[in-house]
Image 1 (spheres, rainbow, N blue to C red):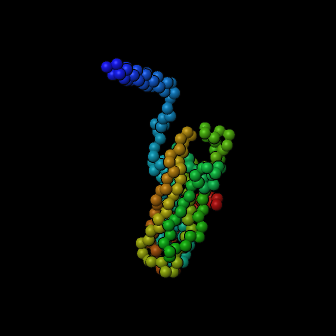
Image 2: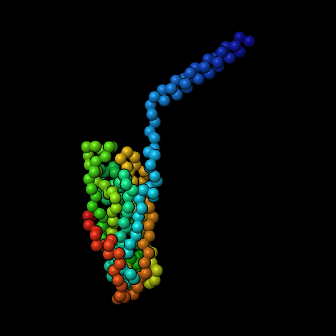
Image 3: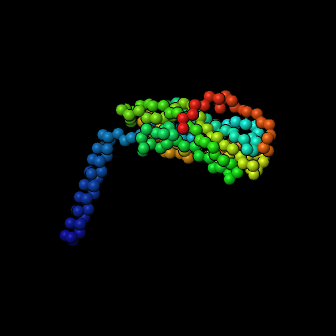
Length: 201
């Protein structure tokens, strides 16, 4: 009987102390605000809107053409440039998944701009804001299949605002166009996009 009382008393003491410890922890925690997600923070696909343009219609074999990816970045957000200021920052890249019959001549990235943020007040960061354009220079080989053609691409970036970064994203894109025989007459289109590019490799 005595053994039962001791065991029961130990259980009550443990329950009481445990409850007291829990309450104290809860009160202590209430004095330290937990980090909260900003109310206007959206997902990465809502923050960054890509638009795709092809420079020729149709695209003849053996003639260089361009694919532009114009990226609109939501106000208050930025992406790291292709050449970020710090090694730990995730660079923005555009990678085409070319069919064997296509050749990548060059990838041209826009020039970033240096800006300071609350998390880096003393070190300006090289970033993209507003609207920026990425450019692929491409060519179709003589054996490329004629007709409707699609070139998949991956836009990799991380969107941040002044206090929070969204997870890095690999955004699938696709450039669609009509591939024609070599020597086919084609017209240049979307000059409003391709004429204002300022390359910065």
